[in-house]
Length: 384
Image 1 (tube, rainbow, N blue to C red):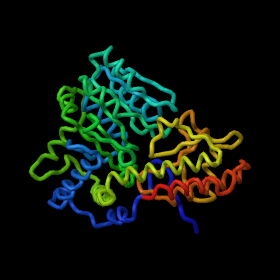
Image 2 (cartoon, rainbow, N blue to C red):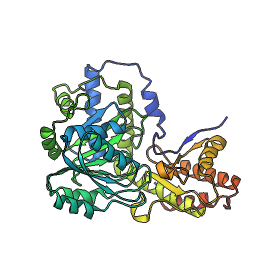
Image 3 (cartoon, rainbow, N blue to C red):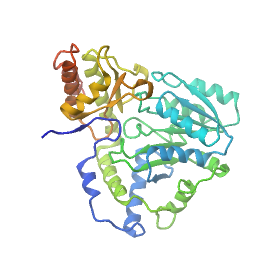
Image 4 (cartoon, rainbow, N blue to C red):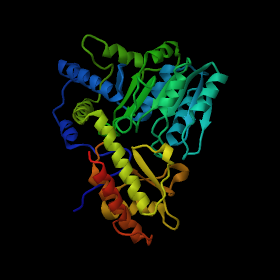
C-alpha cells in the first residue's frame, strides 16, 4: 500500500468535507433548497473575488469562461490586446482569433512578466481597443503578472480589462473591485479546492456596457441569461446546474471563510517560499525570476544530464507523488510543483523528500535532506 500525493497546479487535492458533501442525495435545482444554496455561494464568491459585482457559475472548465468573456464582450473584428507569456496567454490569443478579433499580441518570453507600459503604449496608439486580456497567474510557468498595475492603467480607457485568474484566485491577492479588474475568472479545480467541472466569472458595470454592444452569438455562455436568472425573486440558474459540484463548492467556500482570505493568501506565500527554498537548496535553478514568482506553482529547471520526463515518472511510480512537467517547448526541461488550494506544510516536505530521492537515484549529486531542511526552516520561521 502507498499514499498518493497530488502536487500539480490543477486538479488539486480536495478536502474530505467537500468530497463527502457531494455524496449527499440528489435534489432538484428548481427548489427553495437550491435557491438558498445559490444565494449563499454567490455571497461567498463575492468574498473570495473581493467584489460587489455578480459572479456567475458555469458547468465548464476554466477555458469555458475564457471563451464566455470573448463572446459576451466583443463583436467580430473588434481590436483587442492579448498579453502572452505562457500557454494560457496563448490560449487567450487563440480564442480571440477564433472569433475574428483583430488581435494586438504582446508576446514575451515565458520567463518574463508582462510589462504594463506596453499596454499603455498600445492603448494610446489605438483608442478603438475594446478589451485587454491578461493572465494573472500563468499555470505553465508560475509567472505572476502585475494585474493591479495593469488595472490602474486600463481604468482610464474605454477598454475592458479581462483577467484570467484561474490559478490566482485563492492563492494570491486578486482584488477585483479595488484593482479595477472588470472581468475575473477562475476554475473549481484550483484554489477553490474542488474537482474539475465548475468555473466562475465576475463582471463589472464597465464590462456590462461592453456586453450591451456585443453582437457575437452566445447561448449557454450568455451572461445576460445568468444575470436574469440570478436576479429573480428566487435566484436560480438558466440551465441545469451541476448540483453535486455546487453543493461541494458551498462546503469549500465555508472552509475558506473559516480560514479567512488573508490567512489563505499568507499560507500560500509561505508554502511557495518553502518550496523555492527547498528546490534551490538541492542545487536546482528556479524557472521564474524573483520579480515574477507567484504562489500557486513552483517550476524548476531540470538539471543537465537528468531526463526530465523520467524524473516526473519516477516520482509517480516510486513514491506516488504527481508533479507536472513542462508544457510546449518546456516539455522535459522543467517540472512544476503545485501548492494552491488544499495544501499544508507536510505536503511540501514530502514532495521535496521525493525529489531528493529521485534525483539521487538518477545519479544527480544531491545531499540527502538538504531541501527538506531548507523548507523546514521557512516553516519554523513563518508559522501559520
